[in-house]
Image (cartoon, rainbow, N blue to C red):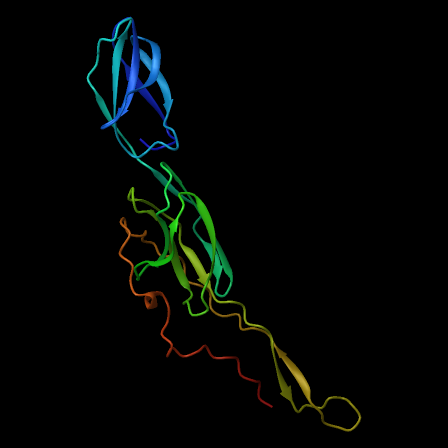
Length: 243
């Protein structure tokens, strides 16, 4: 069962029953009181319920005779990524990207946020974060354009969530000016005249990968795995038109 989910439990017993709930090693507490001998009720798992195994049992009313064996259930934490909300989000190199997550369950401070791609393992962006929070991350100027995904992991309960594919794109190239020796139209003959070069439209981007992220978060690689080497050749600027 997931924290925050609504569950329907079954009860059996005498004329009326009382249901109890307890962790595997802990005290019993009342889950439902004065219930009919047969039927159902709705129980919403508290969002702050600690993850683990619990036991549900019924006792008769009046009296306290056990009328059912223990039914063992498992409560687990639920991790989700709020932002970016869907596949196809775009992050621009050099700009700030917003990330927000939520984990229902016991309070914690061991959440880590990582970034991965189709061909590389994860790179940690932040760690030792609370169960619910957000951050701004500046996309490095050395990062390669392409498709990436986020993983948010709670180490203590081993729950995690994946985002959809995020498209990291290059920043737009500014318009450039180059001098020309064409006639300027001013008195005196030839003079400098600037031609404005529009940014190159470039090629259409590739679609997102068809395969999903791995089912288990891989181990963190060296930090250079997501970025091109310093020796990578810079992109060529558009050349000036012939005179």
